[in-house]
Amino acid sequence: MINLYLERLELREIELPLKSPFETSFGCTTQRRILIVRIFDRTGASGYGECVAAEGPFYNHETVDTAWLITTKYVAPLLTRAQVKNAAQVNAALSPIRGNRMAKAGVEAAVWDLEAKLAGRPLWQHLGGVREEIACGVSIGLQETTEALIDKVTRELEAGYQRIKIKIKPGRDVQLVAAIRSRFPTITLSVDANSAYSLNGDRGVIKQLDEYNLLMIEQPLAPGDLVDHAKLQREIKTPICLDESIVSLADALHAHELGSCRIINIKLGRVGGHTETRLIQAYAFEHGVPVWCGGMLEAGIGRAHNIALSTLPGFTLPGDVSASARYWDEDIIDPPVTVSEKGTIKAPTGDGIGYEVNEARIEALTVRRETVRLE
Ligand code: OSB
Ligand code: MG
Image: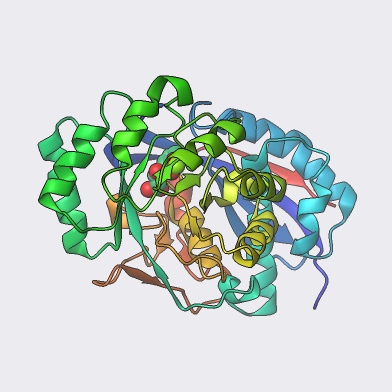
């Protein structure tokens, strides 16, 4: 393979309003602030990444502003010093930085896109993907009323999505699931609590949820509570899926050995990039733990990276990666991501992320920019 010579990193913040507010147990998002990373090599070729840090430190500790600082002040200098020659070296080059995995992942992903483009093949193939089509589900936020929720579920099922996930929080959980189940007794349904419950305080509610034939209960307890998740998993038949708790291969290994979950949600940003994603999926695959790709309300570049990684062998469950039109009036890639009637997305055939990045639209949406040299 040809060597990479990275020349500069260009960071931008764009503002993109969501079509409708997205509410979880930790808060409500109406407008996204999104960091776009573009990395150029000496020949002028470039690759794109999207940093999935949110506006506030509520899903995890990172934010758009911390990711900006970490990227320009620490990630770029480490990358410069390491003189990486290929994308697989970026993860190790950035390992001196603790945490801040979303900041690292935005940059790492851009290098992977660049490398795949230089190699002249789709990123999904470059990463070792094995399927040309990925299975899609949707994540539906908390709604004003139960009727509004049922309406949304109905529409997403009509669109063909293979799995419905709803957000829950204490006080808005069992009755929502019961309402959906009485209307749709057999659909593939799961819930995501984003760490809103505690083992001792909420055992009763979780045991009630256990009676609704859910595909999984995602992240019921706090991110650090692998031991409590293991206790809970022994008490319920529904598989626990961990999201926030798993930020590395080591976490996946510990969670599996403790019995803290039976399913893992992998997010590119949360785990720090494509290299860590591949390590986690390979470990999970070897140990019979299904994985799926989560979402962070990404614009098109992040969505394209999610599509690519979802083609890896372990990704056997429908993910949260869905159509651009569910989020945005107009995405920042061409064509936008679309979903077939059977609830699938076709992996693109073009080089790298495989979607054209709409540079004019990004320019028009940019509110902040900075360029850092990498040589
Ligand atoms: O926990 O999966 C989550 C969105 C923001 C933060 C955390 C989560 C989510 C989602 C939405 O569930 C997934 C998506 O549609 O992008
Ligand atoms: Mg989640």
